Image (cartoon, rainbow, N blue to C red; front, side):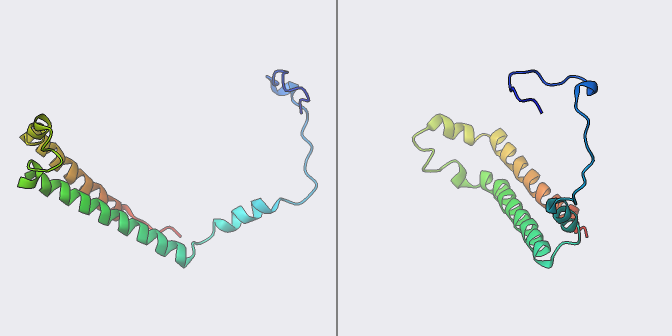
Amino acid sequence: MISDPKLPLARSSTDLPELQPRSHPPEPQAVQGAASRGPRSAVRIWLLRLGVLMFVFLCATIGVMLMILPWRPEWGDNHLLLPYPTLRAIFATGFVRGVCTGLGVLNVWIGFWEAIQYREDG
């Protein structure tokens, strides 16, 4: 170990000191790591299932809303957009409505793709 932090680090393997083999038993962290690689507990599996279910539900809900809302009259006649007529005109164009609908389809697809790809290992 270098005692002065301003000295440069060793560049080659010949500059490094020889490592001595350990004579004491492995640390408890290594033993815990091996135990954690075993089968998952039932609680952890159910929490994972619940997380996937919530993600799929959230993606599907947001996606369906993004597919339907741009084509409703409330989309352009929004009280938040009344003070901004230019922004209101932009939101009323078919291009912006189509982009929002496309993002909704993509969101639904991502949610269901995650549900299809879900696997329980171990």
